[in-house]
Length: 234
Image (cartoon, rainbow, N blue to C red; front, side):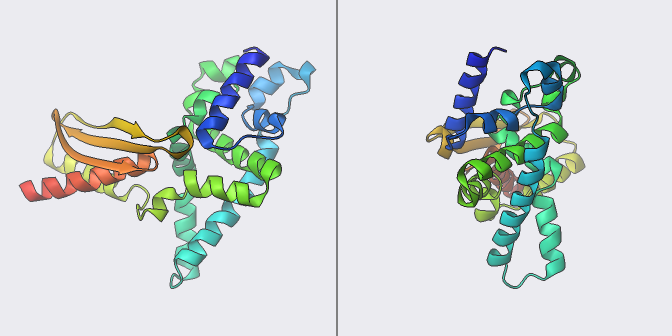
């Protein structure tokens, strides 16, 4: 991929997250996998691993602060478990997919061919690297704003990670239903401040609909409505 095309895709990502880098090289580094950097050794291009290290620490600080102030009666052990579920690899990867972060990762040919672009471990690492890059470029408040909006937004809306979707999945399996899926029904608002609309479709019928600031949150709300409807049927 040539430099002009890379720059264009990175500008697209900046518009999507609502943060525009002063140092564009920081963003490029955050998106660069070691396989891509190794293929271009002559260019001296660094990969995202150092930024990931930094972003992991920033994410832990911001999520800890969020949980501490929003759960005044929660003991330390529960706070630790809750934080772990919020920033675990699958959770981060799902948040990253909400902004289609995988589209912007610079991968080497071998890693691309073996499915690296869809691997949770890589996508979640890049999400942390992006946080690290924003922190270096714009400071802690810029990083906090990004984390609150794209990772912790569901908790701000009172949507626990995966709970309703897990419950619905169990109901579907227990009753032997077929042809079950989530469907994105629409989007509203600018790229950096979207509201998503999702539907639960069961055997061709919409049984739940929900809105949220992320696809995940919208699916949770749709699942909650579907659970109520199925409960009413049974």
